[in-house]
Image (cartoon, rainbow, N blue to C red):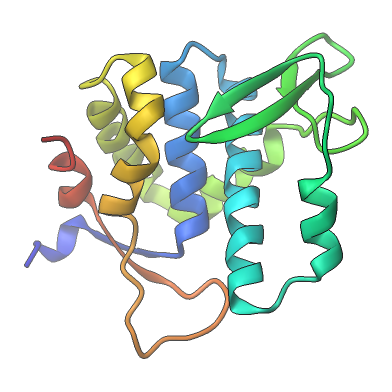
Length: 175
């Protein structure tokens, strides 16, 4: 059992979003690009979960599965992300139709979810990430996330259920 000071009550989506941003930064992406890419990865995971739970529209699945012939992509935590640029030329994830997915909403979402514990969680994730070379981290990063993501109690059902994120599990996720 972990000390209560290492536990944070949060749902999984902001944890995955922050982790994906940390991994993207380790790959060399600047912070705005990293959070835009992270938002895409977390959104893709959320849509897949919604389909598994039977609460997603099948049209969403078909739209997501439609073949795309992008000129520029990157891979993050096993997900292929189509890229575009904002008006200032910053590389961001494509939110659809060439429209850039801004970083600010993802950054604000993570800040709200973690509150005053954000820097502590981020520091634990960065300490884990630095233990791997960028390519290895990107390859195994989702498995690392599965190791430390919040456990949702079995008797809790529903979308966005909160669980306990244990900072000690992040700190000890590396072999």
